[in-house]
Image 1: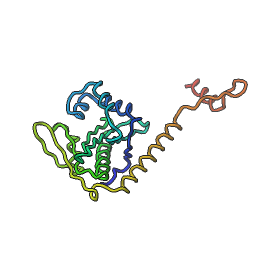
Image 2: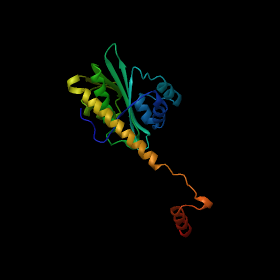
Image 3: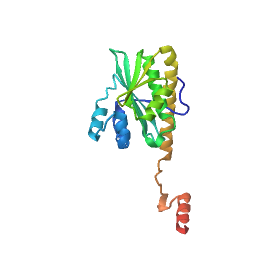
Image 4: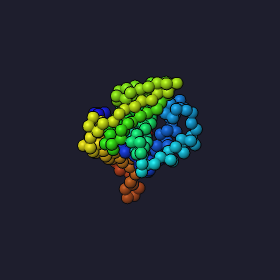
Amino acid sequence: MAQVPGVAVHRLNHRHRDDIANHLLLLPADDRRLRFGQHIRDEAVRDYVGRIDFECDRVFGVHAADMTLVGVAHLALDPAQQIAELGLSVDPACRGKGHGFALLQRAVLHAANLGYRVLFMYCLAENRIMMHLARKAGLTLVVEYGETDARLTLDRVAHGGALKEAMADQFALVDCMLKQQYLWLARPKPVVEKSGGEMPACELREGELAGIA
Protein backbone atom coordinates (compact mmCIF):
# COMPACT_ATOMS: atom_id res chain seq x y z
CA MET A 1 0.00 0.00 0.00
CA ALA A 2 1.36 3.40 -0.96
CA GLN A 3 1.94 5.97 1.76
CA VAL A 4 -0.39 8.97 1.70
CA PRO A 5 1.82 11.92 0.58
CA GLY A 6 2.51 14.42 3.34
CA VAL A 7 0.76 12.48 6.13
CA ALA A 8 3.11 11.20 8.83
CA VAL A 9 1.71 8.44 11.02
CA HIS A 10 3.41 8.06 14.38
CA ARG A 11 3.54 5.04 16.65
CA LEU A 12 2.12 6.00 20.03
CA ASN A 13 2.96 4.56 23.44
CA HIS A 14 1.78 4.69 27.06
CA ARG A 15 3.13 8.23 27.41
CA HIS A 16 0.45 9.36 24.94
CA ARG A 17 -2.53 8.17 27.00
CA ASP A 18 -3.63 11.68 27.97
CA ASP A 19 -3.28 12.89 24.37
CA ILE A 20 -5.35 9.97 23.09
CA ALA A 21 -8.03 10.56 25.72
CA ASN A 22 -8.16 14.28 24.90
CA HIS A 23 -8.57 13.52 21.20
CA LEU A 24 -11.50 11.16 21.84
CA LEU A 25 -13.12 13.44 24.42
CA LEU A 26 -13.05 16.37 21.99
CA LEU A 27 -14.93 14.44 19.30
CA PRO A 28 -18.50 15.68 18.84
CA ALA A 29 -21.11 13.45 20.50
CA ASP A 30 -22.27 11.89 17.23
CA ASP A 31 -18.72 11.23 16.04
CA ARG A 32 -17.93 9.56 19.35
CA ARG A 33 -21.02 7.38 18.93
CA LEU A 34 -19.89 6.37 15.44
CA ARG A 35 -16.38 5.62 16.72
CA PHE A 36 -17.55 3.31 19.51
CA GLY A 37 -20.82 2.11 18.00
CA GLN A 38 -22.87 3.58 20.84
CA HIS A 39 -23.18 6.61 23.06
CA ILE A 40 -20.35 6.58 25.57
CA ARG A 41 -19.70 8.88 28.53
CA ASP A 42 -16.47 10.73 29.24
CA GLU A 43 -15.55 8.40 32.08
CA ALA A 44 -16.01 5.36 29.84
CA VAL A 45 -13.70 6.95 27.27
CA ARG A 46 -11.03 7.47 29.94
CA ASP A 47 -11.46 3.87 31.11
CA TYR A 48 -11.08 2.62 27.53
CA VAL A 49 -7.85 4.56 27.03
CA GLY A 50 -6.58 3.45 30.42
CA ARG A 51 -7.06 -0.21 29.44
CA ILE A 52 -5.11 -0.04 26.18
CA ASP A 53 -2.32 -2.60 26.39
CA PHE A 54 0.56 -1.00 24.55
CA GLU A 55 2.67 -4.13 25.02
CA CYS A 56 0.25 -6.20 22.94
CA ASP A 57 -1.75 -3.71 20.86
CA ARG A 58 -0.52 -0.96 18.57
CA VAL A 59 -1.73 2.62 18.48
CA PHE A 60 -0.94 5.08 15.70
CA GLY A 61 -1.59 8.79 15.49
CA VAL A 62 -1.43 11.83 13.24
CA HIS A 63 -0.26 15.10 14.81
CA ALA A 64 -1.18 18.64 13.82
CA ALA A 65 1.51 21.32 13.54
CA ASP A 66 1.20 22.04 17.28
CA MET A 67 1.66 18.31 18.06
CA THR A 68 -2.00 17.89 18.99
CA LEU A 69 -3.35 14.47 18.06
CA VAL A 70 -5.92 14.89 15.30
CA GLY A 71 -6.24 11.24 14.32
CA VAL A 72 -5.87 7.97 16.23
CA ALA A 73 -6.00 4.31 15.17
CA HIS A 74 -6.09 1.51 17.75
CA LEU A 75 -5.03 -1.87 16.38
CA ALA A 76 -6.13 -4.54 18.86
CA LEU A 77 -4.19 -7.74 18.24
CA ASP A 78 -5.32 -11.30 18.98
CA PRO A 79 -2.14 -13.45 18.75
CA ALA A 80 -4.04 -16.70 19.28
CA GLN A 81 -6.40 -16.17 16.34
CA GLN A 82 -3.96 -14.00 14.35
CA ILE A 83 -6.71 -11.43 13.88
CA ALA A 84 -6.34 -7.65 14.18
CA GLU A 85 -9.28 -5.35 14.97
CA LEU A 86 -9.01 -1.68 14.02
CA GLY A 87 -10.83 1.34 15.37
CA LEU A 88 -9.97 4.85 14.23
CA SER A 89 -11.12 8.43 14.51
CA VAL A 90 -10.17 11.79 13.00
CA ASP A 91 -10.94 15.28 14.25
CA PRO A 92 -13.79 16.68 12.10
CA ALA A 93 -11.78 19.86 11.38
CA CYS A 94 -8.96 17.76 9.88
CA ARG A 95 -10.97 15.50 7.59
CA GLY A 96 -10.50 15.46 3.86
CA LYS A 97 -6.71 15.53 4.19
CA GLY A 98 -6.08 11.79 3.97
CA HIS A 99 -5.50 11.29 7.70
CA GLY A 100 -8.00 8.47 8.10
CA PHE A 101 -6.78 6.58 5.04
CA ALA A 102 -3.16 7.00 6.13
CA LEU A 103 -3.98 5.55 9.55
CA LEU A 104 -5.80 2.62 7.96
CA GLN A 105 -2.94 1.92 5.57
CA ARG A 106 -0.41 2.07 8.40
CA ALA A 107 -2.41 -0.42 10.44
CA VAL A 108 -2.69 -2.82 7.48
CA LEU A 109 1.05 -2.59 6.84
CA HIS A 110 1.94 -3.30 10.47
CA ALA A 111 -0.53 -6.17 10.92
CA ALA A 112 0.68 -7.80 7.69
CA ASN A 113 4.32 -7.51 8.77
CA LEU A 114 3.47 -9.17 12.08
CA GLY A 115 2.02 -12.11 10.16
CA TYR A 116 -1.64 -11.57 11.08
CA ARG A 117 -4.14 -13.27 8.80
CA VAL A 118 -7.10 -10.89 8.91
CA LEU A 119 -7.76 -7.25 9.71
CA PHE A 120 -11.33 -6.21 10.40
CA MET A 121 -13.35 -3.22 11.50
CA TYR A 122 -16.84 -2.99 12.95
CA CYS A 123 -18.85 0.16 12.40
CA LEU A 124 -22.42 1.34 12.14
CA ALA A 125 -23.88 1.16 8.63
CA GLU A 126 -24.56 4.92 8.80
CA ASN A 127 -20.82 5.60 9.19
CA ARG A 128 -20.34 6.50 5.54
CA ILE A 129 -16.86 7.92 6.03
CA MET A 130 -15.54 4.71 7.55
CA MET A 131 -17.23 2.57 4.92
CA HIS A 132 -15.67 4.73 2.18
CA LEU A 133 -12.21 4.33 3.72
CA ALA A 134 -12.68 0.58 4.04
CA ARG A 135 -13.71 0.19 0.39
CA LYS A 136 -10.82 2.40 -0.73
CA ALA A 137 -8.37 0.18 1.17
CA GLY A 138 -9.80 -2.97 -0.39
CA LEU A 139 -11.73 -4.31 2.60
CA THR A 140 -14.80 -6.46 1.97
CA LEU A 141 -17.94 -5.00 3.55
CA VAL A 142 -20.90 -6.97 4.87
CA VAL A 143 -23.85 -4.95 6.19
CA GLU A 144 -26.32 -6.65 8.54
CA TYR A 145 -28.82 -5.25 11.03
CA GLY A 146 -27.45 -1.72 10.84
CA GLU A 147 -23.83 -2.74 11.40
CA THR A 148 -20.95 -3.19 8.97
CA ASP A 149 -18.25 -5.83 9.18
CA ALA A 150 -15.28 -4.82 7.03
CA ARG A 151 -12.57 -7.46 6.54
CA LEU A 152 -9.29 -7.76 4.69
CA THR A 153 -7.36 -11.00 4.31
CA LEU A 154 -3.75 -10.01 4.85
CA ASP A 155 -0.83 -11.09 2.75
CA ARG A 156 2.74 -10.13 3.64
CA VAL A 157 3.76 -9.69 0.02
CA ALA A 158 0.71 -7.67 -1.03
CA HIS A 159 0.17 -5.65 2.15
CA GLY A 160 3.43 -5.80 4.08
CA GLY A 161 7.06 -4.87 3.67
CA ALA A 162 9.72 -4.32 6.31
CA LEU A 163 11.35 -1.57 4.26
CA LYS A 164 8.02 0.21 3.81
CA GLU A 165 7.45 0.21 7.55
CA ALA A 166 10.98 1.38 8.30
CA MET A 167 10.53 4.26 5.85
CA ALA A 168 7.17 5.15 7.40
CA ASP A 169 8.74 5.23 10.87
CA GLN A 170 11.64 7.37 9.62
CA PHE A 171 9.26 9.81 7.94
CA ALA A 172 7.27 10.08 11.16
CA LEU A 173 10.43 10.72 13.18
CA VAL A 174 11.54 13.54 10.89
CA ASP A 175 8.03 15.00 10.92
CA CYS A 176 8.01 14.97 14.72
CA MET A 177 11.42 16.64 14.93
CA LEU A 178 10.44 19.38 12.49
CA LYS A 179 7.18 20.13 14.29
CA GLN A 180 8.90 20.26 17.68
CA GLN A 181 11.58 22.56 16.26
CA TYR A 182 8.90 24.84 14.81
CA LEU A 183 7.14 24.99 18.19
CA TRP A 184 10.42 25.86 19.90
CA LEU A 185 11.17 28.63 17.40
CA ALA A 186 7.61 29.96 17.69
CA ARG A 187 7.82 30.29 21.47
CA PRO A 188 7.73 33.91 22.70
CA LYS A 189 11.26 35.03 23.50
CA PRO A 190 11.86 36.64 26.89
CA VAL A 191 12.50 40.38 26.88
CA VAL A 192 16.08 41.08 27.96
CA GLU A 193 16.67 44.59 29.26
CA LYS A 194 19.99 46.34 28.75
CA SER A 195 21.93 47.83 31.66
CA GLY A 196 20.28 50.93 32.96
CA GLY A 197 16.82 49.63 32.14
CA GLU A 198 17.06 50.40 28.40
CA MET A 199 15.20 48.07 26.09
CA PRO A 200 16.71 46.88 22.78
CA ALA A 201 16.15 49.15 19.80
CA CYS A 202 13.76 46.69 18.19
CA GLU A 203 11.58 46.74 21.29
CA LEU A 204 11.60 50.55 21.29
CA ARG A 205 10.45 50.60 17.70
CA GLU A 206 7.61 48.25 18.51
CA GLY A 207 6.63 50.48 21.42
CA GLU A 208 6.71 53.57 19.25
CA LEU A 209 4.58 51.93 16.59
CA ALA A 210 2.07 50.86 19.22
CA GLY A 211 1.93 54.41 20.51
CA ILE A 212 0.95 55.92 17.17
CA ALA A 213 -1.44 53.14 16.10
